[in-house]
Image 1 (tube, one colour):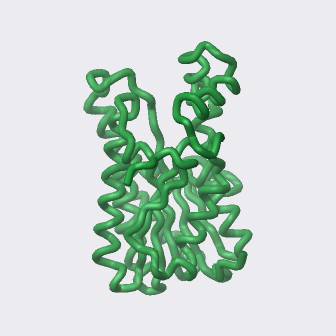
Image 2 (image 1 turned 180 degrees about the horizontal axis):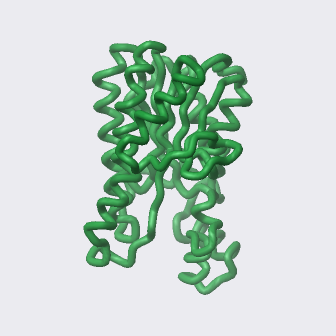
Length: 253
């Protein structure tokens, strides 16, 4: 599918693995230039920066403009989660760290990118999570930060869509990324929780615990495809929206 992204320049945070890396690949396949940001340079992330550093956003956007002379879209993908044992175990430092990574970086990169996006009529896509609408105590601080991202995106849309810059959110549900497969990740924790081998535990979680109508975890490429669409001219009438990519996990009206 030609999304008419050839010649456009996009900035993707958290681009070294998972959804961010998949977004870079999809955009490049569409003929766009995708500039990835991560703490350590990778094939899909050639600018090294910690998005929680206060000055990082401005420096990164300046570098993109220096290299390419324009910016057509921003994907606020960087994020992370540490499962908690309960609310009382989450310290002030934990709350601040979670909000710095999952919310404040979104605010800073959006603020830094908007002047350039206003010149090109660009778009912003923020990666939230189903946890924003399905909060639970193991993700208490993460879910709160992602809920705030939904609000920020709608505020940005209200102010900047009339000026040509759209803002949307994608909210992935259970998606098989490095957060699942890293040592000590979600898959291993499910195996410990259910006293099952890893893949059997994942299958039990998908079918019996969560009851996902699709019967499987999502993939990073599936999320990336929706993000690329929302960045494209084909989504010109889509702004202030939230797209759930969750296998039917959330079925509330």
